[in-house]
Image (tube, rainbow, N blue to C red):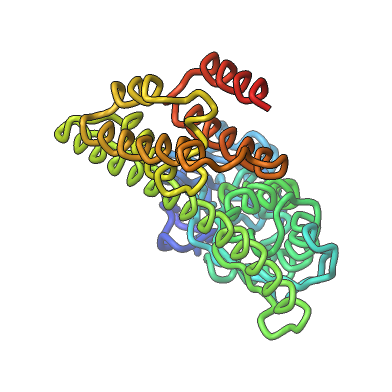
Length: 384
């Protein structure tokens, strides 16, 4: 027979998930104290009847409507039936570790080849339906802590997580070599799939994290694909690097050319001549070195034209050009003064080609204009 005004309260620790009070078969008027984040369920004859939330409750017939008919005055307000109270910890139990006991095979979406994978991590649970959870899990147990709860769900998790893991990996857009950077996506997918399974036990799967992926290290197929994967990205990276280096080299060469051109332009300005004058100097030098230059005189190119050339150059270039022209005139007039006869046809044609070549050089160097070139060319043709 129970004592009058007994106090029934929770006496477990923070890791305890479910705890049954040692006080049983109490009478009416007994005080029930339920802490925050807890619920208490009144059992009679093994049947869950009333549920009490946080606060202080007096167990009287008015507060226990489902057992009112069992309490009566003839028994001095003492129930002749077996009564129990279970306390349920509804706080979120965190850092519950989980892991697959073996690797599962799936078809990798990237390489379309069967590979094996395992996983482990942590999860957190919270009691959502105390009555359902007690009916399915407790039985005759006096208490269940976090470790015991984890052990209870170990087989359950293996039966659910392994096929879900294989399905998620096979249907994902990332392969085994990118999975480490998609842990959040994998965790979210598994959490969504497991939530209804835990709800059947009155539990809410608050959080579910995949923290480690176990890859098939040592498997020849895996290592072969791993090598292909690394080479694929390494070759692309090397090609991109070479391209960038080539662009840098081209930019460097272009900048060097600009700097050299600027330095050359500054040198010409300091020495008093232009690029056109420098080109004219080069042409005049080639004309002076050519044995057929003397024929320019007979083509009608005399001191007047070369004087115009000299006028567009510096004094030094003009002097060299005039020196090159004077021998031309002397060479052209020499046969007449010596009494030699006219040139034969083959010599005349060779002389024509040399004269025309010189005119082309002078036009390319912009010493004479296109119109002057056409005029002198016409004179050469008329002289044939």
